[in-house]
Length: 350
Image 1 (cartoon, rainbow, N blue to C red):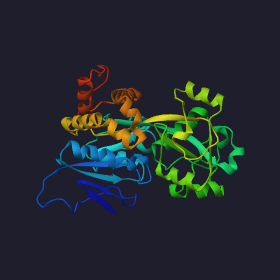
Image 2 (image 1 turned 120 degrees about the vertical axis):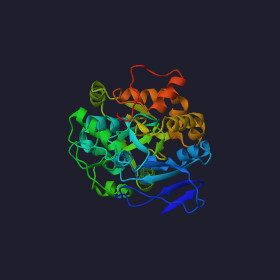
Image 3 (image 1 turned 180 degrees about the vertical axis):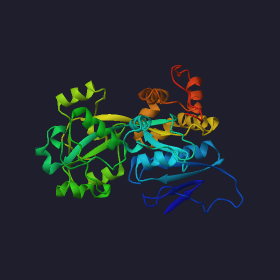
Image 4 (image 1 turned 60 degrees about the vertical axis):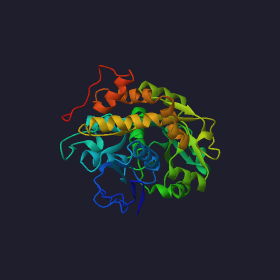
């Protein structure tokens, strides 16, 4: 199924499709509009949910110069690879995914981008997410710390999602056994209720927005958030991970059993290949900068971006200082006196 509006195309096809070709029935015959292919994670994810608002900003800023298509992939990692393999232009990712890509670990072990060997580089950081643990309220008495889930079947979000990767590094830091139980995210409530999974990783954007499938889960069953215990918090901090506290009322519609949620944040991005034009990326970043307040009004997940857009770009780069910065983002940061000469500007050979 695809929905077309004003040069924007959203494709909803089976997630196993490696590349999605979308043709607009509304495009005038003979038109030669340039294309921007926006690769996101699956339709039940936050990244896909906000794609409409983000691509609308670009459509308006470019005045119809570009034909923007949005293609969902099975996971965030799949979207990253799609762009690096030449099947997209803008790839959904996060700081932890960029770390793993350049370390050639996990799904990126022995991986080489097909067309030109180009890896994603820093281009745009859009919002933080906070990963945390929850369980069915009926089972809450069994779980007091994150260690209580060690070795038990847990849905750590869809395999290949960035929050899935985030909890891998969390469990590594804590020395816990990561036993991922894959399920269809839409069946999460039933799986928690039936005990098929002991718990499920939840995540918010900027401590406010829940992923669509989590909204569905809390609408079907009562859930309880299980926070890390104080020794776990200290161990995470000692490993260099941040622990953030936020009000559950900002995200959940019902009581989740805690006065504050403790989550480990990661920073999400829309990064690109080095060879994507400098002027195009500069115009994209500038368009989002100018429309940051409008984005935040439409979705609270963009609140942090609106509050400190430039600072967010700096934090995203600093999370992986060894990774090159796209010339378009570098130009934007230099223009706003926020460039660090210790950073490296990407070239097509990066």
